[in-house]
Length: 185
Image 1 (cartoon, rainbow, N blue to C red):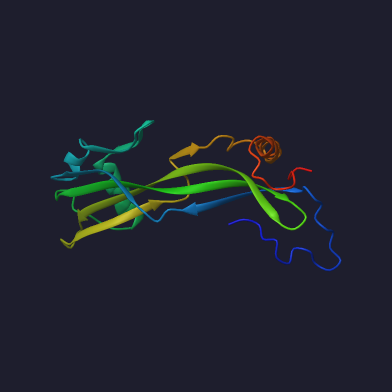
Image 2 (image 1 turned 90 degrees about the horizontal axis):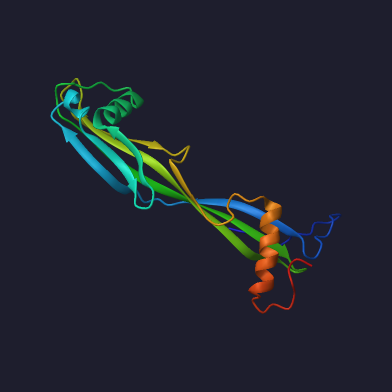
């Protein structure tokens, strides 16, 4: 990820001024599913008395539901049928997506990444297993990748682009990497 300095100046274009800044926000998914809690019950009715959760150590419970709620959500999501008198099982998983807000400065020859703020978003996945109307055991997973259930925002993540540029300039003055220019000028 990042800005490339290859072929950035086009014919009849305006040259990039020395010290120009750019803030880019990118996301990268983690393909791993992390297992949380699992529960099962003798039938759908009993499943309403057994709850499972996604728990984050520092925060606590992020999501908690009875197994019956998870099973009916997944069954309906897939347009399936199930026998309410047969055993059911549900399991929660979570995955992460990582965000990067990188501050770049133009040094006359290329873009230099000078500061990055990070975040980590949690996404819920629920697996359910049930017996369908043909007496087949069915197991399916429903993913909720559109909105996170938790965001662990790094320092300055929610700051404006201008504020991040100012932070990067200050950071550069304090933690110079030995380059012979100051990127903000």
